[in-house]
Image (cartoon, rainbow, N blue to C red; front, side, top):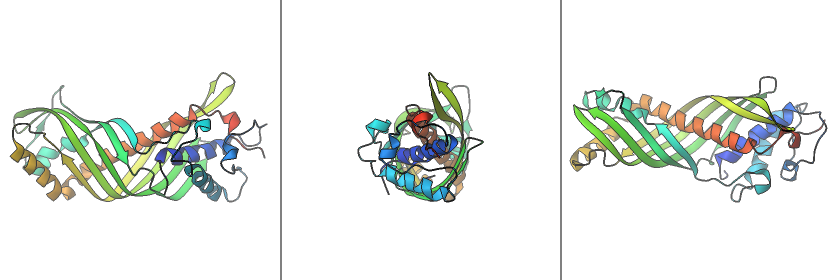
Amino acid sequence: MHVSSKTMKFVLTAVVLAAIVCTVAGKPAKTSRLAKYTTLCKLSDPKLSQCLTSLMKDILKYSNTGIPELNIPALEPFLIPEIDLKIFQGLSASLFGGNVQKSNKTKAFARNLVVHHSSEFDIHDLKVDVKKNELFIDLSFPKLQIEGEYDVNLIMFNMPIKSTGPVYINATDITVKATLNGKTIKRKNESLLLFDTIDIKVNFKDYAIKIENLFKKDQNLNRALNDMLKSQKAELRKLAIPMIEEVAGKMVLSMVNQILTGLPLEEIFITE
């Protein structure tokens, strides 16, 4: 803690829309707004995976401007309110041989994250299990660049550290495999499919983390910290992976549910 066009939001939206199309296939149809932008898929299509991929690409053509009619905004970069900076759980022990002392007041978060290049991806696999309301997607990204603000309150080397400042996280050659599980809910006379859980696995070839002004009164210590972050990347990789997975997981769920809240099933399915 999968994925070129402009925004990951459009990708996941398109995938989910295709899943919805499949789940309600065969029912009487309203006029579909989505049909203006792509060819809808049928559950009986023997080339369903190819159809879903084509649907996504069609939707992504409008990523610069969004599609207001479908409540799909243009969101590149993508914004994430907050993640847990798990890297701090082992920084001291990994880099200096010390300990991060924990208490009820201990915290380490990154807030107001701006994710760049979230739409520059390749789709390797996509599967839909209609009966389980389950979606699997396998994506890869050439790179992700993330910037935000850290907020920490902890004790390192017997020193209390309460600080905020800029944090930068970059990763390259990222692979994402995610399974989303959802449920259908009723809203007035409409049906909505929303996803509430996600199982996501992330890997990457390389990464970099920069933390500025953690030690407010000692710039030499700040430089030493970032030098060690660079030189000890292999040791810190296990701490970076769950942090990247959290970013990816929050992106996926947020993107999908924001879009589907405004799109009832009755308007999205295709009639057999």
